[in-house]
Image (cartoon, rainbow, N blue to C red):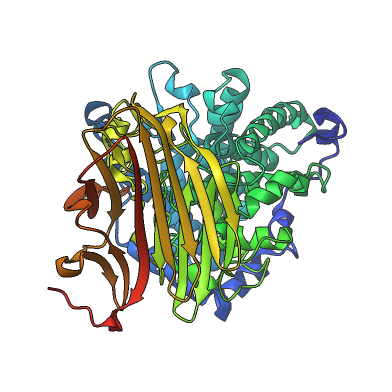
Length: 613
């Protein structure tokens, strides 16, 4: 974004910060009274109240050195982070309940204790984000930046109920842990990151500055912070193509773009519209990304470190729908419940209430097809009398943010359930982001629906890239084809062309064609597909069914060409839980230097007389 005048002059013209940034009538008491007693917010309030009752019966968890040191010793993040996020849960829940129930001394005292506890933490950073190359007091990570933004916002929204010394301490800590290091100890590696880190870290610091630096004596510091923040935001936006796709996945779109929007909103309001990120065309394209990801129900395209089933942050979604023509408001049934965010972030939780009425709900996402040229994704959501069905496939390259080695990966969903899946993100550990990243099935090619060619899996690296050969959509079908030879470190592989033809009928079907060209006959070729559904085999008809309720995905193959091998496997999901998945390996019986493999996946209803043998 370019402003017409230097930032120093723009800062001199800024309006004062205050509760009018949050409440249309600048009357917080009236807003929270309406929310508390409105039928429209009934479910959300019940969830927050239930969480408050749970927390009243528990103690504040300690953040001990023993917990902090586990990451360095074992690589495990879960133990410290669970305690850390539970403390943020207390801070946020009792803050919201103090706003909703201002007469409750119990909630207010619990909130003050939570503020005190957060202010007493040695660091707001997570163990995974600190190292010996930078002193702890100078380290700024995602969560320290978020915490500073949270405290800044709470001093505005609950300032009349804060003891003066505690408000002073909260402000001091934001200066000590965010403002001063940001200006004096940088640059930080995330300042020019073209992914969520720049938006969250800089956006949180910039937001806190817009709220706390509000006097003439603050103008120089605010100018410096905003100049650096604006640079980071420009880097974040640069990380997107003109198609607005987020290669990190929908979850990181919610995270990174969410904090971008929270900052941009405060900047717009303090500058009275002079500094306006929302006027940037690419920002509108990014805002449209979420509505392109859902394949029916909660099934969401989850390439990279993303979850296969998602909800929406209703506040952010409604804000964007109210801000931009062409951004569609989501159906209310996709609303993320209060406890959905296991990190318990204050900014989205607050805005899920503040921004809920920025746009009206819709019945459902409309059927549509999306060609995301820069990301090299194709997404199709179709609807018929039989339900909603979805298909997505990707090219791209194998050095994307939160990369998986997955060029040519695809997924198929029906009636809100994935039949061919992407595992998405696994448990985050030290090794998960280290040299062993691609040994994890959820990250490596071995856990994706891509072939294993002469024993070779796809490899990571920017040079491992796809070339789009065809992409087209019509009312009846979607076509997509990519050249993928560069994805493999396989010297004899000269060409690998994968193409899909998605037929949008009442019960859709997908034709997959793989054409391989090698310099000599390979020893083996395996077509691998990944599913979370236990397959049912019907050998007499050489067919395999993936069944969910009364719907099935049928895959018929020629037993003279393939030997089918089904393997049950396990992986640890993002929350550390063991999950079962299945690889369906079609071993080519007579591999040749040039081969064409054709497979058909078609949805069927189970009233066709099929029975398990």
